[in-house]
Length: 500
Image 1 (cartoon, rainbow, N blue to C red):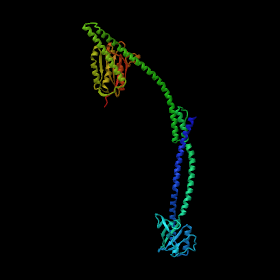
Image 2: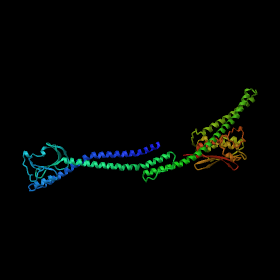
Image 3: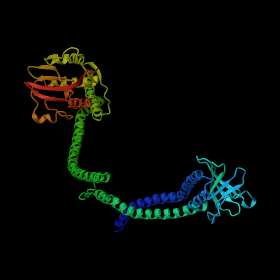
């Protein structure tokens, strides 16, 4: 139950973090908008007021100063636009002012006097705006009351200077009201958005929560549960991928079970190899036991002074020397076989003349051929080149040829042949004689195995030659084998052709 509670907490934490992130973003946006609203609105209203005052000045400039309705029209413009107008003569005296609360009849030309001092002269500049308009536009403060006005000044066609006063308090009040309303609307929108976001986040994360449950079941090796289809977007594709992964893992587990069965068989095979290794050790012990016993026996005889005849002593020494050479040959072959099978020797192939190598090998065995009255036929073409490690292939040829010699029977013939196999040469050594029994083929390449048990120890043959051939050819990665042929047996191996 505790684990389930923790799981629910972790799953819900995704929603909480996502929701909190969206709330933080909306809050920052809300604060930025609210803080920027007041100065932006104020500047917008200042610009609009400037356009309005310029339009009023243009309307005044189009009036006829000597008409009966001139002052009434000036007053109407002042009242309708909630502004105060002043006209200043070129000499600086006050020509006209639309006083607040006055009627059109009381609005007339005031002569320049101290009692009718210009309102503009009683203000001081606060801010000067650099707009692309004719005249000047600035914010001014009244010295007596500290009231602020947006003042547009311009010289009209009559030569008088026009000052238009618009109360800045009107703009401040408008900005305050507009900002309050705007803030309330934004706050309402944010709250509504948060409610919508909450349900959207819950709906958005629901597939992720279900996918998490499915993956937990997969981690527990339970593959019966599947993700529901969530649409064609990335989340839907993720669900499909999880389902595919679950199916793949399920089939993989089945395959692993089969592999486990195969592993058990491999273990049994390994045990068989261990048994073969034990047999190998027994065979080595057996092969060494006889020469050691012979050497020991003859050495003891010499030590005991069994004879004083020099010929007898020399005979004993020759026997000990011969058995020592046999033991040395066995040890050398065992070491070579061990290094080849362990892959500790690196392969260093080169291009060389295979035909010359076979010719040299046949010359090496010429005396043995003569002693056994064997007729050798070489069907190897001249200039036959290959790509292999020369000394290793020499060992293969030596073992094949010596094996052919010791198993050759009437009519005592050995044939060495070459066949083109595409990018490889197949070299075969055929000898007349008895066929290899079917039951011997499987063990033919095993160490210390002799298909023909008639040969004695005197021939210095231990049954390791074909094992060494097997290791060398596997080191080259090339095929090899033996077959019963018409009237005899053929051993073969393949090597790569000469490389450019």
